[in-house]
Amino acid sequence: MKRTHILPVLLIAGLLLHTVPSTAQNDKSFEISKNLEIFAKIFKDVNAHYVDEIEPGKVVKTAIDAMLSSLDPYTNYYPESDMEDVKLQLLGEYGGIGALIHQKGEDVFISSPYEGLPADQAGLRAGDRIISVGGESAKGKTTAEVSSILRGQAGTPITLKLERNGETFERTLVRRAIKLENVPYYGLVGSDIGYIKLNEFTQDAAKNIRAALLSLKQTQPDLRGLILDLRGNGGGLLNEAVDIVNLFVRQGELIVETKGKIAARNTRHFTTTKPVDTELPLVVLINGYSASASEIVSGSLQDLDRAVIVGSRSFGKGLVQNILPENYNTQMKITVSKYYIPSGRCIQALDYAHRDENGRATKIPDSLKTAFKTRHGRTVYDGFGIEPDVEMKDQYMSSISMELVAKLHYFDYATRFRREHESIAKPSEFEITDNIYNDFKQYLSTQKLDYSTATEHALKELRKVAKEENYLDSIAPTLDALEQRFRDDKAGDLDKFRPEVASLLKSEILSRYYYERGRIEGSLRGDPDVEKAIEILHDPAQYKKLLSK
Image (cartoon, rainbow, N blue to C red; front, side, top):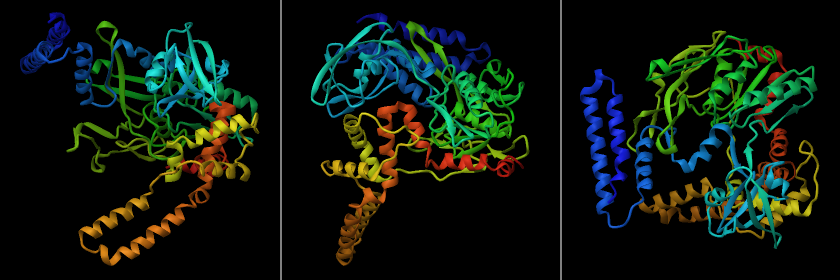
């Protein structure tokens, strides 16, 4: 057995003991010393006595991951091999070919090449099957495994063998530093309302929002309002959030304050530069997947009565993480504080220090939520994310659409459609016609659709309960008739849910010709949140009333 396996653990123990303040040495230092000694001894004995050889790094990482998972989902350990993932999270940047991939059975396919990047420049298309990558067969590999081979140092070549329409071909691509666009689309909705979509708060997000805003104002000097879309945006860099708010509010405003265990590290973030426009009416769109930096932007603009918030309640992540360098080129992302927006409220929705019987973090009860006031005196609350000023009904996908997404039927049909149609109308004009929809239905008739609805589950449960309570014999004919009637009705789901199915199909087809920007632009017409935002921005009285006490 090699003693070097336990040296890092013992070194950590020594360092921790030296960092405990002298006033708190007693019980706490003993507990740290005792438990690290126990861990080191167990690790040593496992290494010495376990029946098979162990991988020390893998075993210790498992232990670290388990320890950190008991704190919150955002405190994570990254070994040296995962540094590309850390870079992607912080900067939206990685070394690779610039394409999304997905798995179907034992095969891996190109999902979507990013516009203008190596995969796109080499002529790769969504739907291309990857046969081999870097000389290794892709058969049976997971997307993570293939992605790991595709990623690498910028400037290095990688050869792919692919199959399209039964024909195989090879492409040698040179990896680039891939930086994902945090502003994939901006433009006008109607003739006088600007729209900007922000996907994540990575480096230069504020710079790109600023450029988009100035371009919109130049394109339409009489711009009547702006929609900033943060739906599905999980957050990112705190400074980018502050700088984005700074575009719309005056210099010197407190936007967010962080408070943690170490008082010396508590910070207050103010706007520091001259804004672009403090008067332009602004609507921010959020939903349950808008988190962290998205909530700083939407929450602070709400607290300062600078924007109307439209959508559904945000996620509620009021925790701030820092990256700490660790030994041997490893890193740890650790929650160090909570953030508080201008009204003084914290928007964290879950209490990770207290868990239920299933180990899940508990929600902050309504009785402990505190009321705060916006600048104009409107009442807002802490403890459950950002509540919109105008709440919109959540849109839930039907069972048939979930089946079509999960089984990649939208994807496969769009791949076939792209093969058969060299071009289509621009995103703002393209629609799913009767001919296209009927062709899609014909395609689906050759596929196996196997999905269950909530109604079917309820009928199945009713039959089970009726049997347990000895009622089944008397109601079986009624249940049989209901189930048959439901099966007949379910056969018409493609017609019943046509607007939803057509919308998702349209999005997938547009991405084949116009990439992500086309998918976004094409989705704006008929989007209820966007339409509500336009209505508010076209009605100054309504806009002013929503921001008044």
